[in-house]
Length: 132
Image 1 (tube, helix red, strand yellow):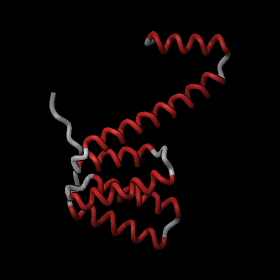
Image 2: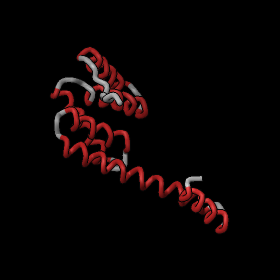
Image 3: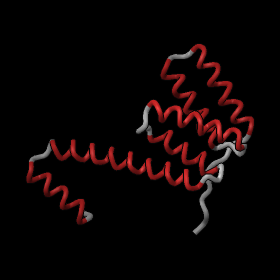
């Protein structure tokens, strides 16, 4: 089985993402700014330069202070930590990400099962546990 590697980007890619973000930040709508920020953070954390990775991690953590359950930025924080050799912090971020996924799964499952009758819900849970 071969090793898998995270994607990496060069300086030109990061520069393009920065230019796009700054251009949209001054003139764009909120959704456009958020999308450009997302692309910038992706580029920064996947850069081969430690300064970019560090800046990307800072942007991730700022976003996570606003919205702690943001799955994408939690993943980006883990990527940045991993690329900077901070493996314990990367694992901590991934652990937090799994907690967010579990929370969302529980909410979705509870909502779905709540719409079913009691007998149907029990049958569905049993089938999931059996792997059917």
